[in-house]
Image 1: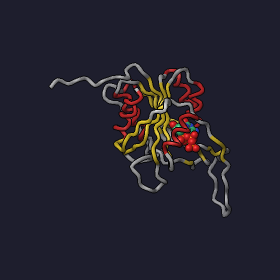
Image 2: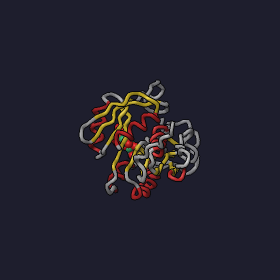
Image 3: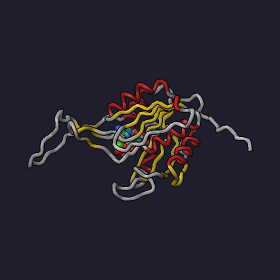
Length: 230
Ligand code: CTP
Ligand code: CA
């Protein structure tokens, strides 16, 4: 049978993706992180590249974080920027925004940062310590504010009423689309959320529509999300 060329519905488009965890340093050798591995973001990047898009991938670096791999021949369409803190991520993403048609915010951004990380290594002492933390930048909100017509897809991992929390967030953040999935507590096993190869949930649209997407491989899910919003 003749090979049909893959459909390239996103040819000529450039997509900005935030992915992975952000971290916040405590001192010279310690930092706070979260359970994100960047897998959903990498899957979104690979699905976008496979559909012909160019990708600016702003990736929070931590141990074991997953990098997208471009399909053969698409390497030139993938730029990966490594960042650590939420503030780094916002600055880097803002630099790329003007070159992009849409934004996919899959990063698990720390909501707080350590206010004054110690420049050296903190020493052990037999006394309690407390860490002052301040709100960190909302990367997605900064991008939304600087936008010039780009579309926005957000992600939300929620406990309890996933769809209701998702609807509120989509409206509050002024997004076009939001994928909401249930997340387990750290240490509990689940087929959705952090550090597992599968995910499933509901894709919410700003016009009120919602599309449930059952639990599947993150790469299949990434393709289904992109096809639904295209
Ligand atoms: N996000 C971001 N920067 C932040 C927090 C969130 O860019 N500081 C983005 C995430 O990448 C995601 C969306 O916003 O696409 C929703 O993230 P979430 O953590 O669910 O939103 P919050 O407003 O932080 O709400 P919550 O209190 O539930 O954590
Ligand atoms: Ca948050």
